[in-house]
Length: 219
Figure 1 (cartoon, one colour):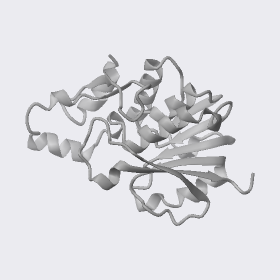
Figure 2: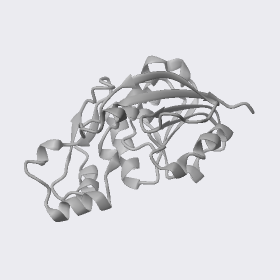
Figure 3: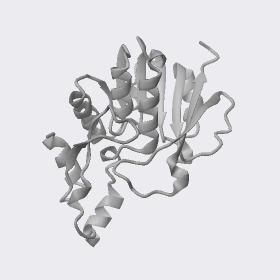
Figure 4: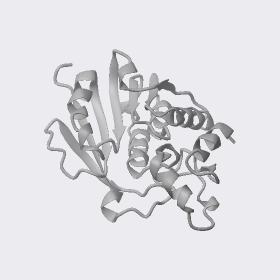
């Protein structure tokens, strides 16, 4: 059990811990994720405040991450032999899937040190390795593919759609929050239903994940 992940999680929720589980949307990739069995009663006021102030996003496998990871496993040619950077990696599930599917380099990129620890632990759990990148500014100068799942929840992130295409030959995006990207470069490939794992009982509209593929015109 990766005690380091428990230590990170307990900064948010003192009784929190992770457990090995397998998300329904990508059943071939076990992950260390939040263990909901610790919530035997309602959160105290202090616990609720901590969760809001410092949410441990990495301890959940969000619907879009599951769908994107499974899409890569089902379409390994998208990543085989390529340098792949997963932006906003969270649990690392997409980077792990890219490595499993044959990427030459699978890079988990996240500004949260806890997320990078989670990506590393989840890669080891699956018997593979991923590289770690502590933020967009530290990315390699040459990338074949950028992947990103549910990074558009913040409207300020919308310019990243164009920035991704400047930085890599292709972009593979999964999103459940924005129904219309208003970016003609991103071609929708599919709409797939999935639920965050462990399930957070989100609105049904957030369980519809859209997959997009974009090709850089300048490469």
